[in-house]
Amino acid sequence: MCNGKIRSVIEIYTSRFEYQNAKVVLRSVVNDVSLEKVSNSILPDLNEVNTPWLKIIENSDDLRSAVLQMRRKSFGSELKSLPEDSRLSDYEDALDRHYYKSAIKTLKANNPATRYLRDYLAMEIDHRNMLNILEADSIGITSEETANMLIPGGKILPTRSFSTIATGGRSALLDILRGSSRFDMAHFETLLEQVSKSRSLDSVVTWFKEREYKFMKKMSYLHPISPLPIVYYVAMKVQEVADLRIIVRGRFAGLPPEVLEEHIL
Image 1 (cartoon, rainbow, N blue to C red):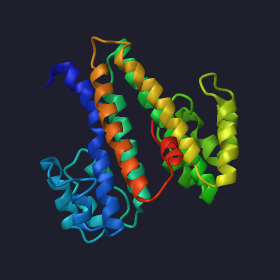
Image 2 (cartoon, helix red, strand yellow):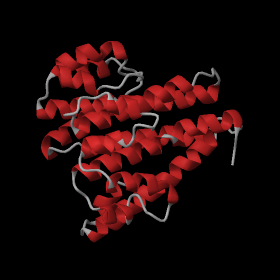
Image 3 (cartoon, rainbow, N blue to C red):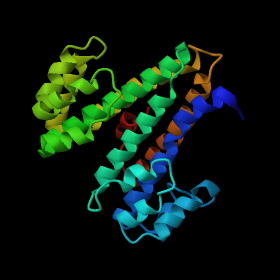
């Protein structure tokens, strides 16, 4: 398909799918989801790429045994270094940190296309950190645990702000966001009012996905002679599959069309 520098940049984006597969495996093991159910849905056994992942599920007795079977993965040592009594969320946070750290480190070239992809990753990181802070605030976890959930590399929430945010929680987050010129704080506060009423972060998650989609869409035309249009194509194909899953599962569950539309980009 492609090689050289173009391939290396594209792989920075596509490598995330291996991390996502690792999360699927860990969640399946923790929740005791049958191998048959996983192989017939999110990791179809018709795709040979999924075979090693399905074998991990088949051969795992618990979360730690699944982690040890991933030791040869790029993120294997990161997962193995966590305490044996770590929770699923700890492993998922470690996967996120490892992916973004590796991706940003690889994007060293100083050209417009690379900078744009770095900015996109920074947006994703900021969004994840905001959601983590809101979730931490809602369940009342400690400032130390909150700090461990945060991922370095964002622009709106730089690493130097982490200690302040971890200590001050949601109010500290909002103070920092109010000082940012690149964030629609008014709309965000409106969404937070909805969150308070519904006790669900769905509206915030959907808005973040819309922001990422608009940013990603520009990759299709801003730098045509670069890897970005290919990254955009891959991302949109993945999104199509995700939307189809939402539609099929939503209709099966009896959700009305307007609810499904709210969750589809």
